[in-house]
Image (cartoon, rainbow, N blue to C red):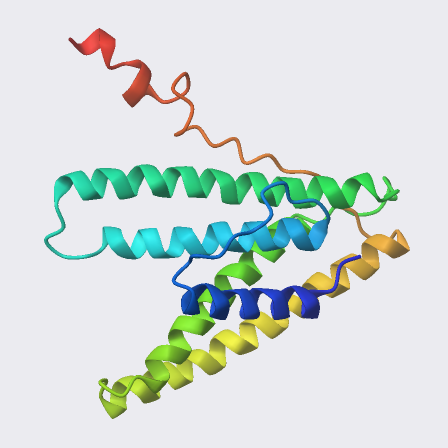
Amino acid sequence: MLDARLIIRMQDEMTQLLHETESDLELEGSADGLMALATAQHRANFELWHEEDKARVPDVADAEIVRVKHAIDRLNQRRNDLVEKMDLWLMDRLEQNESAPLHSETPGLMIDRLSILALKIFHTREEAHRVSATEEHRLRNAGRLALLEEQRGDLAGCLDALWAEVLDGARRFKLYRQMKMYNDPELNPAVYGRGSRR
């Protein structure tokens, strides 16, 4: 049901494919199943990463910054919603030992971290091999790449260990709602307070 190596392989292959197709890749809109949800979630992280890059371009027009900020908020909400959907999907198929110690991080959150690491690894590898960069730059990024790959290996091992413990009844997790407030006009004072400031 959950295998960190398969998830990493999907994330790496999808990252490569999305860069080759310049993000013009259609995915099934109604994701179901853990791998389908993880794929949709990685796609949201991929798009979020590249929107954030656009926000950092020097001398970009204010209107573009506003557009990018709204896109970032929308994508971040989708990313977090999909983390919750992965956890719910897993929980719906489990009978957890309610007396087992609670794990503070859910499988969905760990899959999200693996997704971010896949993107960091892809871009760091590019920098480690970029012909137009200095040798010092390439070496620095080769060192960063090795560290990122080690961290991902550690995290994948932790995810597999958590899952084995959950299946054995030695550990449990529960859904942690993100409770994002910035996208809700009734919870964001910068939005609901606009009328009272006129």
